[in-house]
Image (cartoon, rainbow over all chains, first blue to last red; front, side, top):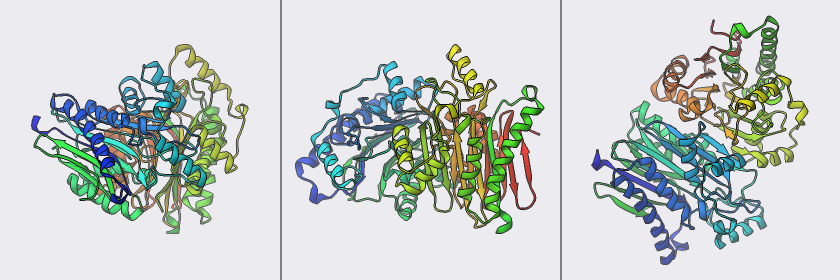
Length: 308
Length: 308
């Protein structure tokens, strides 16, 4: 099994255009992806678990201010950074999720703590923050989450009274990771700051087990990024797992069908990263681009943004 | 199609024992179920939609103080009635869900309003309440939600610092309805007050599309009641739909497999009501009992609590 370790990560999908990208910006995004990939892969390589690997990769993406999660989270309508995250372990089907939290440095670690140290799967808002404080999770003040680019985006969205997906371009700001460890166990994790200027404490697909995040040792581990409402209604991650388990599809066939056909028909824009129990990796999206990267023990090592 | 209309409802599953039941109590529960069944069936019979029928049935169950939803919702740790609900329409796969709300008279109607009048699927907490106020949903004060029995349960749970599923017996307090209308469209709705003395704004399976609530015209409509964490991890409602769609199982086979085998193996106690696109009804549970009722155009008309 040792040669089967594999990891794939994403930093969000959407209308990512070469015309809006400078070489410096592209280099910075790629460096952010590489750091996260390194953080996760190092754990897999040294015999660690997939659940620790996806947490480490997502923490790294959360700490990187250019992705919409953790430190780079967008502003909601009230000017707060309201974040969601989820994690799932295919080995025992345990899961943890958190929605509508502010101030927690690494929402993915709170999701993991909920999975490991509570009898619940999903906590939210003030209640989740009480739990985080009891368990000693790290908090940061408003200044830590403040980035000038996000502030400008929010001010512009406020002016027009529109909900903004992420950037000035149409981008689904989410980060995520999936991994297979040398013990043969799969895991998935996803984290997001949601939509700029979002109202009503909207919850997207990221913290919904089965929609944006899912892992099952019988099939695959999946982390999604996209227009969350469509991913929730289609129960995207679990649908792919069921197509593998009940319809005998391969990971490639199942992800192709769901992302490039079923989601497109409903108007659901976005993508996902996935890994199956054999170490096969899929990184698919029906949008212009997706920040993504993957690595395995057979020498695969990719960092990509556009379709080609 | 007109003779295929069907509805099934539940008022929660769990350790419901004959030894704790008086004839008066049983009569009251059955009257509550009958009112809800009547409210939903009347709409189906007059050519109305399944989405209106499940909303009407669940509203009736929410208004009935003996079930743990709406008026009969249990007290959380802070002494509040924190409620969740979801609704889904198999015709267009649209869905609405709400979590951690207080004061809304009929959470199921808020879920339906989110589905019909917002671009989102899931709203929560204060944000959801702002939306509800903007849309003119009915609110009630604390007194409306106060029932002496729930207060006593909460005080007892506080004393022992334990989370209580619902009653003094182990009961999963949730209400729900599924329906097939004469247009051939399926719908499902679920509503709950959660667990007595629950902390941390825990979210159960009821408002999670795919877990506690799901409807798809290709397969079935499902509303669950049970130990929510297990239902979330197993994506119960969507799993049944996938077993029908991808593995060719009938509604009976799929619900049997998931409730009586797969859930039992994980330790997940509870049950569900389901209806498929042919009007077949399933009402299953792996616990001692489940408050349930169903009716169709072929003369089926049942109100039951125990296994037999």
